[in-house]
Length: 492
Image (cartoon, one colour):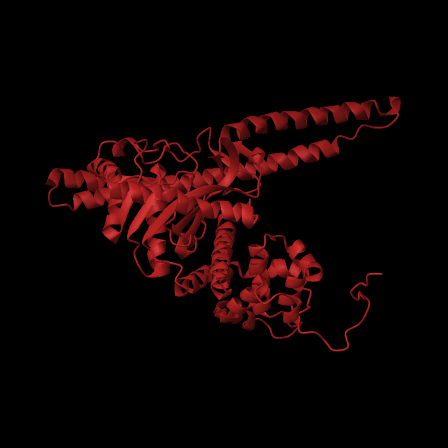
């Protein structure tokens, strides 16, 4: 009879095995652990050391960081699933050195150090640059609508809030009237009718809508005040222009003072603290408002995630954020990443290009983008930075099929005519032809390979940090495959 290999799952080891032997030498977990050991985790260390030294000792930040990076690389985003994997998955178990942090510990670490973890994106990018994966010969900028952790059915317009408020108040009055009638007939029926639960539910909804209306009013009033102050600054600049007539200068100063007074009346007294610096230059969507700062009837707010917006993706409306990336052509490394809640792409072009320069310390030779990014200001900004822009101006021969999304003031400008002519040249056709093959694959790889289909958190800042961490994982996987491919022996 044929004999079998020895199988004794209950047999204890006579000598303890080395954890590294649990996995092949070219496994991703080894690469992640080695890379994290080279990263500067000083920002996390300093915050950890500033805490009270008493109490239970925390897990190593190297272990927790490596655990989260490997989890995002392999499509495991839930803290409960990560905690479960430390028991069930050999790679997770190796990274944790056979420790098993509770899911609340994993979630707390990610929440507490989300900004520090997001900042590791630049360090991983520099590792990719050191490996020769970034050339900056051609960088393509693109965006996608990433689904928020909220339902579009939880969004309500200002006009609908007012109508529902009146409807719910009438329902509460009707229920109270029914309660009084039920009390009068209590002895004639089997059991008294208690509408208190229905009343409580409607009163809670009324309170939520009142809070949302007030927040919407504050947001539109603040945005209107900022626009008025910006107009005042522009008028003062015109007044100081020597070419302006003296009579007009006085008028501009007077109008600017009126704009400031209107802004002071509209601005909330206890304004929210400003956003963290690095993302202040990104466009932010504000609901439409009237001249006096009141929300328009169609201004919407989501009860679950108030900073997300309804956006169009693949012909369907979803509650989403706009996730932006700038991708280097040579190995599809993401050299800049950003996220905000404004759906149109045009205002993201210059901030993304500046991030490329800041992150890499160099200016790309060519920069491409689709027609959604075209504007006169963007063309001038790119040329001022020293890169040659190739931005589609809409439907034209051999340069893509995306419909133009261009404002009226950009339709007949020298920059538009120049860009169309540039894209018609052999060099322009060759450069723009590589845009789609450069910018769009990372989105597909993030969704299909990493399994990241929607944002996990609520709020703009939290989701910005997660998007940077997702892009970090994408770059790390590119670096891993490049290094492993080089190290593997080539067949003759």
